Image (cartoon, rainbow, N blue to C red):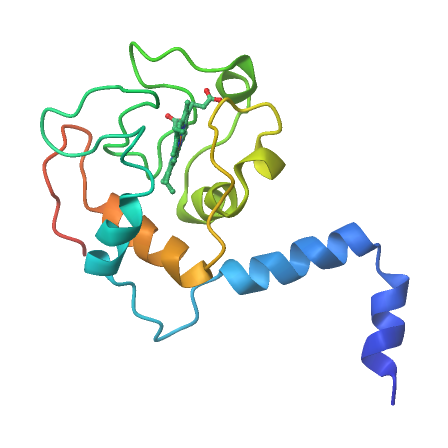
Length: 142
Ligand code: HEC
């Protein structure tokens, strides 16, 4: 009785919060990522970001091939020094964290976007973005 609560009290709150966030953001086995739903979510990004063949930098950098790419490396885009020096790599978990709350992960980012509330939206959006190779062609997901 009360075991979970007493463990929680001994754990630093920040650590506990990070731990819970990681649990929430990990795709549960069998939780399908939905590319079509992700494309709809991307409408929120499309004001500033382009993907696909011939995509150009806009207010934000081109997002082709973003998964696995180090942050701040799109040629011709002028990043904030916060992003350029973040040392982040956009693996799926890091990208999901960023999209949940951009300013928590990169406090002085110039990306003016509050974040996506729904974890399902984030997972679907990541699945959508994952399709695009560096040159904007669609790679078939493994
Ligand atoms: C209001 C414009 C705006 C919106 C909306 C926006 N972004 Fe951004 N985004 C930016 C800007 C500007 C940057 C560059 C940030 C910096 O340099 O600090 C950026 C950076 C990024 C990066 C880092 C790219 C890199 O090359 O390191 C990712 C990933 C990203 N945005 C994804 C998204 C996604 C996905 C959405 C939709 C959920 C979104 N953004 C919505 C403007 C926006």
